[in-house]
Image (cartoon, rainbow, N blue to C red; front, side, top):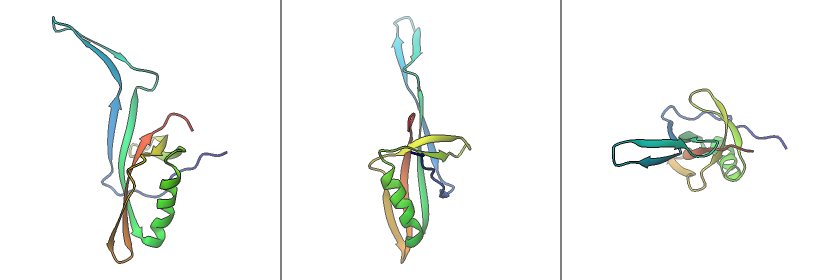
Length: 113
């Protein structure tokens, strides 16, 4: 089965959080030993927003709710195409004015389809 791609444009104010997993040991003489933790030590999280008419945002909402468990391709703000999943509790729809909707959500980097 082919892996889907998120193709909608996110608003300019997206933000990235990069978490690097490490093991650390601090010794009494000031020496600190640091090592990587696992194969994929750096994982990205992106906070994003899409907006538009309710009619245009409905497919975005459906895509997001369908990709909490299954990963998808997305080109991040740096232009890097990587696998992501939607954070399970992050999809928030706000009806701003009449039929205008703003959807905020979070992508978490995935390392397997």
